[in-house]
Length: 240
Figure 1 (spheres, rainbow, N blue to C red):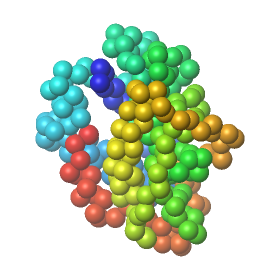
Figure 2 (spheres, rainbow, N blue to C red; figure 1 turned 30 degrees about the horizontal axis):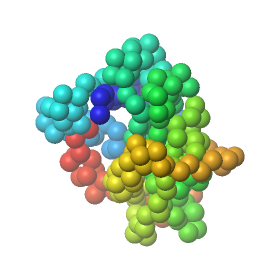
Figure 3 (cartoon, rainbow, N blue to C red; figure 1 turned 120 degrees about the horizontal axis):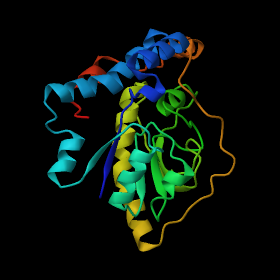
């Protein structure tokens, strides 16, 4: 690993904290806003209280790995950081930006992404919510090639993951991201050995955006939950 890039989810280009909060509130109401606070803001707050101890950035720096705060993944500052680091491959994991073709091309091996769903199903930012909305929820993780379109690249590996009935979208996402770690390791080893197999993505299924108020009302009627108290406790234990 030659560079760790950490996205700033509150960057000015996407409206900052207030702009994003207002946009989500208008579209989806307070339930989604609570989900985002618990899953995005609360781990950062807990990390700040711990003065960064145990955070991903602290662990990277302890190993001599440069850390870059990413304001614009396709901008000149991050491009310069990538050129200086000279990565063989870009790996995105729980990253909120879409890499352009020029950005992906800065690594000879291109890029791969970890997505917590069985693509091409449930492309988008909260796939576990949409999976739970189905009559028979099916969860899993996919490692796919990065392309300048959301969750649409060729599939390198995919694994179904059994989750308990009635699980919250937040807990499902945590479990799936943990399950993706060994799968990503297998893909990296196969890419290094030249044995990785790629399945063309074909025509992607419809994009699943953040749920609006109507979708959240339907979810409530079906007993689908974004989070509960255990998710708040888990968020406080995370070091972002």
